[in-house]
Image 1 (spheres, rainbow, N blue to C red):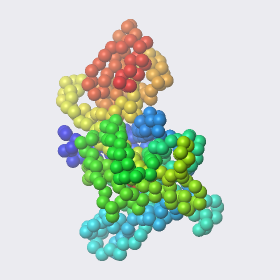
Image 2 (image 1 turned 90 degrees about the vertical axis):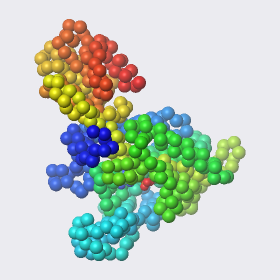
Image 3 (image 1 turned 30 degrees about the horizontal axis):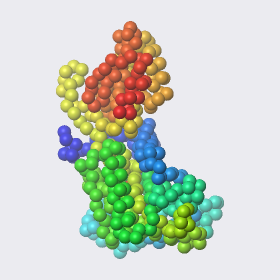
Image 4 (image 1 turned 30 degrees about the vertical axis):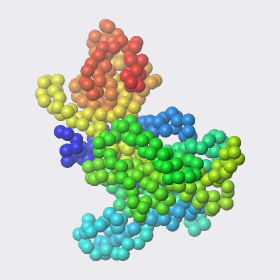
Length: 447
Ligand code: GAP
């Protein structure tokens, strides 16, 4: 069935995620914690691979971007200066009958989803930052916040990065890490969470003399985002770029393009690209009283750079990737019966397991060779090892979790020192000498 037309795609991906250990509900043995999810062994590898690929693409391979890793808790003055304390609000309405709370912009003309009531309170401002206390005393002075975006540290640490890494404009500072938002209506599986991760770049440019000067960089980053979407395995035909009108943009943004994905529950934001002007550096300069200007080494001229910000959510990437990769194909079982083959067509770079080693039977002659092969491959890749059930069923299990290659050790292997390598997508099989296996797989996985 074509995945676009499959009305059960979301349910299938959620079930597979849970059954196979990608993503499951958090705190489950205590009845769960609303809208919190934990990553299982496969989800942990997938997330790590997505973040590694992002870092390799936007930091390692670029000479103009460096990374930082700041604290989740920053000085409260940061959030005063950035405007988050004042502006990071959602409009909240409450059902007068059952007291369920909703985001006003999401409620529209609907009635209460909890009790069907139609009478709501007037919208009030609700700040979405998580508040806690630094130290043992709960007080106004000790109040601190968990960061709602990773971006602010890139502004606060800007002078340290310029000085220590000797960066020259234009350049970017990147960060990957947790962000927290006390969302009024989290939901749609891992789409809207209260605790999530962001991968962000603040790209600093000379103050533009004309609109074209910043639009040039904005367009360059839009192209980078498009390339990333293909690289990470998100179905580009389901991605739309939406220019956000002024009244809906964040307080700091002069232009925002939302990169939206057609999720089964609607077309919604996947990533954002914003032109933040010099809003943040100026605000931090004003509030801190420190000079945050960039000094051109040659001319000695001081300027406050402007900023283009591509921002990527890690969990939304995971969701879009899983929805894009999930496919069902008609296939024949070992007995020749028609069956559905579920394949997670993940790009090799982000597949949780790169290789699965499968001895044809649990006879010691085979498991001894297979264990040795697995041990050797573990030096290079994250691998799986499976000896239970028929080989056909084991192939299907690996297809379902997106393992690009299966290595089968059979009775011929004992004689000829070769194994069968099966390709997830083509299902083609090749005999490869055990001595050359690691190199062979390395080439295939890096192709
Ligand atoms: N620094 C800019 C910024 O934070 P944003 O549009 O609020 O902009 C950026 O967030 C990205 O973070 C979003 O495009 C999305 O991928 C992700 N994101 C935001 N809120 C989220 C949430 N509650 N749950 C999961 N991901 C979220």
